[in-house]
Length: 300
Image 1 (tube, rainbow, N blue to C red):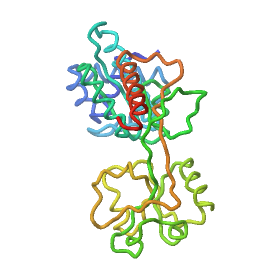
Image 2: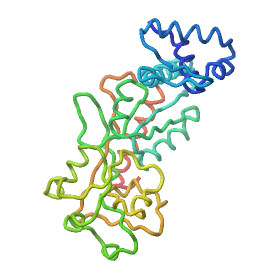
Image 3: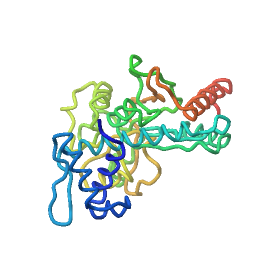
Image 4: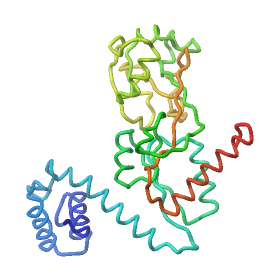
């Protein structure tokens, strides 16, 4: 069985790309560290590092272990913090993955206002990444598109509605319109989401196969402004309005699709999962906020 302590050593070497640098960080001798990693490689029957000169790099097997080791160490650290929390002084981390809608941010703010010891970790990733982390327990919750797999998950439907559209050049003829139709999209290069489920939803809305469109690029997560996709001429970015934070340049304009295409999300968590006290408090706050909205005719 792998020792968590040795996994920490392995992660340090991978991050420092050096046994000497990792040994200094860990405050241990370099020969001792090298011996521990060699024993780990022997136990696994795999070579984890390519050793050359002053720099070491992960092998393919090493890269696989790196991700798993990060998840294991993170889970161990979170569990230790939760167990050490005083019964009457709730503190701990709530980890949420996916695109985070404003409703959840407001619920998180209310949670922290009452329980100052609770902090939040927001993990930005695509559906595949956050679902995997949710299953492994390194995330408490994930924001996923509805419908939700109710066999594996419990969920709370979120009120935020995202409307699909496309970013087009501000100087183009299309920019003067209020909406974009299927025919409009057929005559321009498009950058679309890589996820098959979203492409299928877009295809159903259009009533044609994706092959009918000129897909010049795909993406999994939009970090920063997506404007360069458009201004470079690579393609108009098909996305939802909730992914636009106002950081787009004046050279592009977002036009919604016509007829409208909308999606809704849910806050998802594993069925029968043993949620921490902090996660339970946050979940209760989300449900209370939803109830207040319904009682107030949609206003929080």
